[in-house]
Every structure is written in C-alpha cells, then in structure tokens.
Image 1 (cartoon, rainbow, N blue to C red):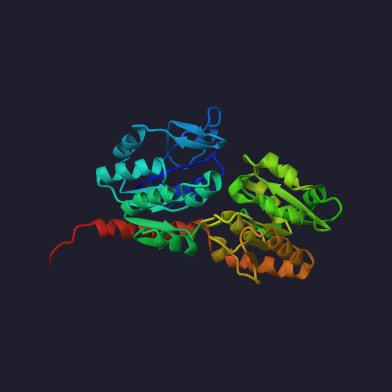
Image 2 (tube, rainbow, N blue to C red):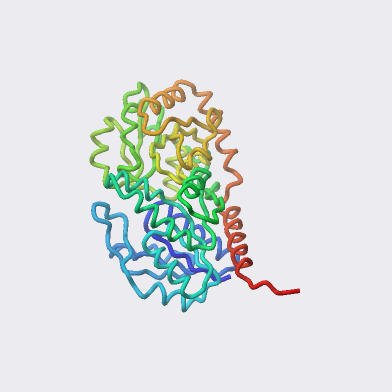
Length: 376
C-alpha cells in the first residue's frame, strides 16, 4: 500500500503529533508498505533528523508561529500536490489537519484519493486559551476538513463526543501506542534521583510543553508539600513564568529518547495538568514506566487513568485537588507501588505495532468502501 502522511508536525519537532506521525511511518515501512511524509520544513540548521526518518520526507516552506517559535506553520506551496501526484498513494493520512492538512484534504479530493483524518489537537481549546475567542471558527474548520475525509480517527471517547457534538461524521476510535521497551520501570536511576532530590524527597514529575494551555502552574501547591521535589521536563514559551510560579522546582529542559525514559522511571508520581488533551501520550509513557498518575478528569486521560487503581483523576483547573491527590500518593509508598504495577500492566499490550496494525485496518476499510460494487 502506498500512503502519503500529511502532518502538521514531524521530527525534529517534539510533540504528540510529530511522534505519532513518525511511529506511523515506521510501522508502515516495517509492514512492507511505502509511506511518504509531507511536513512543514524545520527551522534552518535543524534538519538533521530528517535523515533518520524511516521514509522519504517532503518539506514545504514554513514560518515559526508568532510567540511560539517551536511550532512551524506551513506556507502555501505546490510541493504538496506534486508529492501526491508523484507518489501515487492509495490513501492519504492527514495527521491533525488544520493548515497543511486542509490543503492535503483538498488535493486528495481533487485527485480522487481516499483520505483518513486523524484528530489529535484540541484546537478549539487552544483558541480559548490563547486569544479568548475563535472557538466557533476553529470548530468550523475542523468540521470542514474532517467532514470531507472518508474516515476520522479520534484518540479517545471524549474526543469522539466532542466531534459528534459538532457534526463531524464517520468517526472511529484509534488510540495511540506506547514504546513499552523504551519506557520501563527497570530504568529507574538512583544516581539521578540523588542528584535531583539530594535529601531523599519524593519526586513528582511533569513532562510536556511549557505553554499556557498546559496550566503547569497548577503544581505550585505541590511545590509546597513537605518532602517533595517537583521536576519539570520540557520547554516552551511559559518557561520563564513557570520558574517563578514553581518555587524550588527543578527544570531539566527538553529531554528525549533513552534519557527521557530514565527520567520517567525515576519519578515517584507523574502529574499532568493540561485540560485540553485529546489523548495525552506522556500519561501512557509514565504508566509504562511504572509510575502512578495524577491528571485532569478531561479529555484523553479519562480513558487512560483508572481512578483509584493506576492513579487519580481530579477536576480540571483545580490546584487544590491536584495538591490533595499528589499528597495522598506522597504519604503512602505502598499505594504508589501498587498503582505503578497496575499502570504498567494496563499498557503492556498498547504497543505501536498493535495500534499500527489497527490503523492499516482502517485504511483497508476505507479503500474497500471506495471500490465499485460489481453487480451479481
């Protein structure tokens, strides 16, 4: 099968959309298919990661998002349509379509190529957070592109409910995989723990972008808990604000690969604060690392965290509830250990190979639906 993956983000970017697109391309190659990735060009001087991609990558011109230079926005370009024509795909995969993906959907429609659109980003929530308006416009754009696709794949039951409520048709659930070999409890590093928490504190970690929509400042109360060290992994436009808002927290910057896996496994508790997650991959990575999770009872974490068994779900935007949930885990080492074991067991079957095969099944369904019916 020949597939063009049109994605709003791809490595060297570090985010959920880029990671999922990369894993999708890898799995398609592993299964003997022929993918091609079309993505915004990375910043000048940051193109080495493309050489490590599992398949060819076509970069379209891009500019940094004002106020958030880590995010690149694709500019209009003929390279997208040319890539589709040259690659001759059986199906077009649209990863979190909003700008480049909208053009990809239009090109696929013109060329008569089936399209699968993957919903991954709560753009309406971001509109509320960043500009205080524009939610209705964001949903109109989402409804337009996803409504034109042969199938929309949503990562969580909460996302399905949101999409259905806004009139998006033909939705199926497709969750994300997790690398259960890279993220393992065995990578817990006592030397790293002594470096981060020299007085033997319980380590409460956050991993993700440092941006307003993540609401990491809700961990301020956790910083005040006795015997706790808060560790923040990631970067982004809110970093300067958070260094003031989270007194005593250790900021490790952006980490990836085995280094990130070692940090995850060295946490005692993982705390996620953002209420706009359609899935929340870092929750799965923490669970694979055998770490109990505290997360908002909103979006993707609702499906991932088994409240009272693998962690706690708390009301969104409630700093007091976050502090209380973390404090209960800090106070009970046996609970932390039990939740961590259950968390690891919960995700062991959610490999990228398993969900990649599910994705190929969705492609095959869409292609079968497009085939003309032959009269008996």
